[in-house]
Image (cartoon, rainbow, N blue to C red; front, side, top):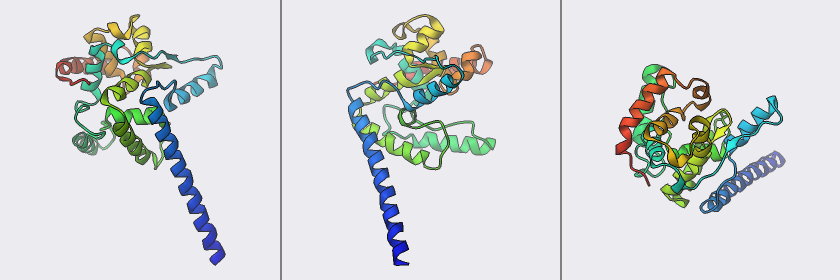
Length: 231
């Protein structure tokens, strides 16, 4: 019996060590990305692998652009659409989470999310789209690291450069070129609002660009943009 307990404790210690090493690996990446640009993300790697299963020569559309070369319209649109309290919160919008929970409970299914831009960035950079019981806890830890180590401006800059905007389309510059044949710096308010409206379901809207729901949401975002606080 003592022999069994000894091995159980060793197993637990090994598991704990693996978890600590993984968190240290994440911490090191975030520390590096404070002033170095990530070249890829977990979501980008997953999407590329999916595309290459069908077409081995497939490549992602992605080009990094600095914060100052992205239209203020897009910054306002994303904050208005995804995280109105981005400037003020420390990673989590508790009111938004509560409202999303109540809305989902009323509908009997998930129709709204309460994730902030920081949470979405944590998920995009490090976590796959697969569901797992530990995923939300890990997302929260990564969000805390991002908020403690990076400025809001840096978080938004990376977010705009790595999120998915269509079938193999990642980042503001690639999306602007793909949908509007223009640079991210030149996006109009209307174009930015539509791009922001696509974020929750980009691959669907890539092939349904005139969907009524997309048009309606774009109009709502456009109306909210003047009030958005941008870092």
